[in-house]
Image 1 (cartoon, rainbow, N blue to C red):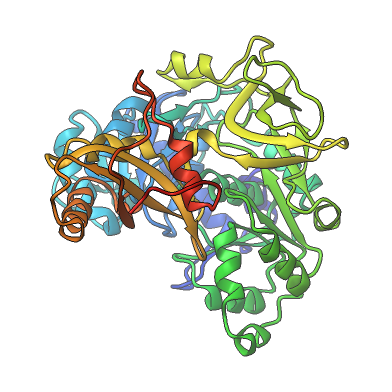
Image 2: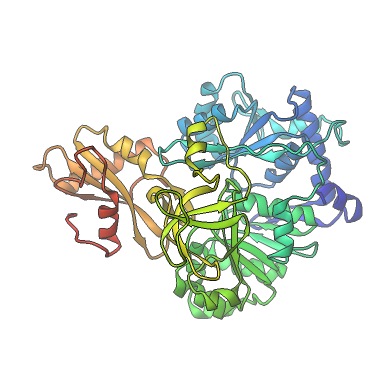
Amino acid sequence: MHPFVHAQTQPDKPAYVMAGSGETVTYKQLDERSNQGAQLFRSLGLETGDVIALLMDNTARYFEITWAAQRAGLYYTCISTKLTPAEVEYIVKDCGAKAFIASPALDPVSEPLAALIPGVKLFRTGGARGPYEDFETARAAMPITPIADETAGSDMLYSSGTTGRPKGVKPALTGGPIDAPNALQMMAQGLFGFDGDSVYISPAPLYHAAPLRWCMSVHKLGGTVLVMEKFDPEAALALIEKHRATCGQFVPTHFVRMLKLPEKVRAKYDVSSMRSAVHAAAPCPVPVKEQMIAWWGPVIFEYYAGTEGNGFCWINSENWLAHKGSVGQAVLGELRICDEDGNEVPPRTEGAVYFANGPAVNYHNAPEKTAESYNQHGWTTLGDVGWADEDGYLYLTDRKSFMIISGGVNIYPQEIENLLITHPKVADAAVVGAPHEEMGEEVVAVIQPLDGSHDQASLAEELMAFARANLSHVKSPRRIDFMTELPRHPTGKLYKRLIRDAYWGKGESKIV
């Protein structure tokens, strides 16, 4: 299925509704505008397999652009709105984008970026500005009929690596028709019950893999998507009640914030229409999930997967209550828990999480990172650590190279450490995730000062300002602590686990 099919059978049905503004885009409008977008891309000389990049907040134009790229056989790279101009520049150049589209809310990033990406065609939604041409005006000049050579395009998203440089995941294009079903669409139907009657609430930024892909899967099925410009816990509940939402995708932080509303506020809203509330991105604390199931009923589903798409585990409420803390059984790929030599270990033994006989992993322009994701058996890993019980239920116990997940956002320490170590008053630096009641984890920098006589409070303030001036705010440490000497092996290897464990109550702390 595809939006163009629903444009023929139910043209006036809302494809999506913007929660804040109320702007509604019907399937007829989505079909026509995506056709015009595809025509525009062809007029620019973009051919099947070329790439466009988007730096946009949640606006009504987002899906008009991604569906235009999809039906033109293009890759569409959706970039985090939290990045700095230099960070965006790297992704635009690495993915090879020939066109770049930004929204007005991102002007502070897109304006200085323009000079950094010469040769890339620049567009801006909501009106022209500087070197950016108005996207809607350029699109409106194009015919609403399909291009002659339609073929299915795909997202090309970036998953950050432990080195701090993001890794592009570029799946092979199928060369097939634009309405061909895919694995995610079939999982949405078979595992989570999405269908043409679904009213799907999307509370997260659309540049993330999960919101983007699930929303577009709902469009394939002919349902309606409710796009929240920004998550607010009470607004989400009101939206569910007003539109009789049937499904949605969340991260545990969303659950925490809704649960922290006063009981009288939560009780005001009828959420009985929800049939499947799907969550992922970070492990959900057991008490939080227990409370959500008690509140919303057995409609909470969880899955474990990555942007790389090499495997997929899932679990429903009933099975989770019998296997609390599990992220489920594998339904795409075969789960393997391996020791450091890449060999499978017995049930209930902790090891690296691999998938066998699943889709391949291939990082764009990073053959060494691609090779690192495979073991000698050809099984692939995202770098997570966990164990499986006798029934094949997976329990995650660690995450890729101490990746920090704060509010559902992946943050990788190495890039932050690499910056902090350049400060003239820093001898060594380690960045870890510490527990945070609402966000799950917060970014903490542990510093070994070059001169121990410096006042720690003033140095912490100085380093905070230094980080914020050079990193996006989501990566900047929320806390600065100090150690006389960081625990390093004589070879230079940092025993980061010792530092992290101190924050999680697993070890003796020498942090001040």
